[in-house]
Structure formats: C-alpha cells, structure tokens
Length: 401
Ligand SMILES: Cc1cc2nc3c(=O)[nH]c(=O)nc-3n(C[C@H](O)[C@H](O)[C@H](O)COP(=O)(O)OP(=O)(O)OC[C@H]3O[C@@H](n4cnc5c(N)ncnc54)[C@H](O)[C@@H]3O)c2cc1C
Image 1 (cartoon, rainbow, N blue to C red):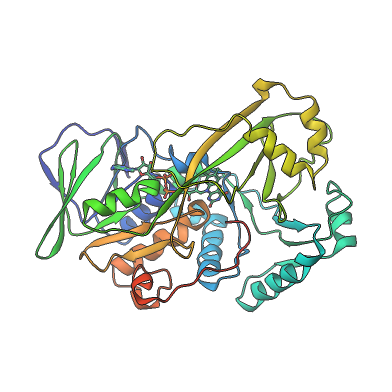
Image 2: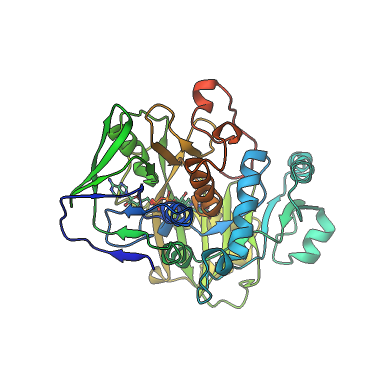
C-alpha cells in the first residue's frame, strides 16, 4: 500500500525513480512507475496532493482534438478514466465521471466550415462519437442556447470529473510508492552517468531517474538539472457561481462559445464559467495568484451571449455567491506537452508543459513510465522533447487551448 506522509528529516535514501510534483500529472506518473515495478518516491512541496494548478482547473476532459498526437493521448486517458477502478485496482474510489459532452458552438456562419472540417478530422484520426450538429438539431437538443446559435461540434463522451479523487486514486493505487508532502526540491545533482540525486529540504534522494512534473514550476526544476526549456506560464481564472435558479439547465454539457472564448458548465450547487483571454500576459511561476475583480462579470457577459439563461441568473446574484480562483496554464512552442527523456541529461525525464494536464494525465503518466522502462521507444513518441531541436513540430488548430 502506498504511503502519503510528511517525512522527518533524512540523510540519504535511495529510489529507482523520483517524481517531482504532486498534482494530477505527478500522481499518475508515480502510479505507472510503481506499477512497472520501480521503487518510486514522489516529492511535493505543499502540504497535500492536488492543491496547485490541478485544484484550479474546471476538471474537464475531451476527445475532440484535431492533432493526432493529442487525440491519441486524450482518448487513451478517457478510456482509463472510464475504467478508473480497474486501472488503479481499487474498487471504492469514485472520481465522479460526468459524460455529457463538450459542445463547441458558434453563431458565426463563416466558422461553420471549420467546425465541419474539425469533425471530419476527428473521424479521420479515429475519435469515435464526434459529430457536427446543424442549426435545427442544435436547438432541439440544447434548448438553452440563444436562437442565433448556428452549429456546433459535440462528443457525448467528453465531460468532467473530480480531480481531487482522481489524483488521490492514482496515489492510493501506487503500490509501495511513497508520497512525501512538505518536501521541496532544492537541487538536482548529476555525475558522469547523468542524474545522480535529488536534493530536498528534508534530505537527499539518490536516484538515476527523475521525472519533472512540477506544473508551472517545471522550468525552475529544469534549470536545476541544467535544462533551459521553452515554457511560458500564463494565468487563467474561473468563476464559480452558486445558484439554484430554475432556468439553469443543470443537465447541460460543457459549452464553449467559439466566437468569444467564453465557456461554462453545471457544477454542484451552481455552475462554473470563464473565458480564455488571448491577451493575458505571461506571468512567472507562482504559488499564489491574484484574480481580477471584474473576471466573473466579464465571463458572465461573454457566456450569456449564446447562453441567455445566465443573464437571468446574474440578475439575482449576491457577491457572496461568486468565487473567482486562478492557476497557470503552461504553453510550449506548439501548445502540446513534453513527455519522456530530456535527452540532454541522462535520466532526467519530463511530463510537463500542460494547459490540459487533467485530461491527459493517465495516458501521459503511462507513456513516461513505458519509455523509462523500455516498453516504448521514444522515437515513436510524437510528444518527445527533442521535437523542438529536430524542428519536428507545428501548432495545431484545436479549439480552445
Ligand atoms: C482556470 C483553469 C482551468 C483549467 N481547466 C482544465 C480542464 O478543464 N481540463 C484540463 O485538462 N486542464 C485544465 N486546466 C489545466 C490543468 O489544471 C493543468 O494542466 C494540470 O492541473 C497540471 O497538473 P500538474 O500536475 O502538471 O501541475 P500542478 O497541479 O500544478 O502540480 C505541480 C506540483 O508541483 C509542485 N512543485 C513545484 N515545484 C516543486 C518543488 N521545487 N519541490 C516539490 N514540489 C514542487 C507544486 O507544488 C505542485 O503541487 C485548467 C487550468 C486552469 C488554471
């Protein structure tokens, strides 16, 4: 049985693998390494798992990616979430899977060919269940949408879950792995063979394999090992709105306005809404982030355009019914994560660079473990870090990232 603990100070201990970061990505990575038979230690500087970016997310997953490299990972991950108890080998865990779909909707006629093209692409790369929905059908199936909505892409298999339960599920299922809380990595040591140890504020862990799952701090951890990664961190906010308004369509899917980047979904006791601001500047990796006083109002304004019920909900809102929180997306030059060996430092592996780390975490954790244990050749991994050096990458046209 794995152990989640705050360790006392130690001198030097050894591990086959050290995972840095206890968000959902690190936890899934530790799970798969442990399942592959490696004595694994995960170190997390905060006092609990799933408390930084993972806790800030809107907890959604989707299969709708136009790039095959992302779609393959997303689909594998959804399958693992769907079978979570069998995957982690624990019957009693409920990750609260809600599969009501992602609805990418537009009222801009000029966007309709792009939506149809996206659905053709989903089918071409093997995503089952994705559909284009034209105007008549759209309003029959999603009566809450404004009359001007013209079309959408949809996949009922997409949805949301509890990231807290999933992160702890991976941790609890991780064999004899140890999860060290309140343990901060301060340095990574190397010798002629590559990585040799991880220094923490509690003591030194001697190891030949380190996986950097430090979320927004992945660049900082990379530098400790001598790796300068092309990562950008950008604040993203979300608003929770507490409401029992009768007009709230409580069975709605995750709904995205493709014209103004506003999105929303039902949540226990109300709803979540937000928008992705393309002009939000980069910000340094942070443990604490401020939120904008007008973020909730701006999000409501944007989402209401195609979801007019929200205007009525907003009419009755009190300040204490609204809570805004923030975390950071991490972007790479092609907006896709980096998974696998750094290449430049033997034994220093990466599983980071995410704006979508919740939905990719099960598949990405397995992939990094498969590569580290020789089950998968990194050359067959389209998300390998060396793609940037090789020039083998391009930005895709996936919606909302
Ligand atoms: C508003 C918002 C909405 C989002 N919605 C979604 C969504 O719907 N679906 C989705 O897939 N993604 C979503 N995301 C993105 C998603 O939250 C992240 O991609 C994901 O949580 C990344 O997980 P992680 O484990 O890599 O990072 P984190 O959860 O940030 O975990 C990294 C951990 O590393 C630890 N760490 C850092 N430095 C050190 C150190 N020196 N020593 C020890 N520990 C260290 C940190 O304390 C942290 O706990 C959203 C993000 C935001 C902000």
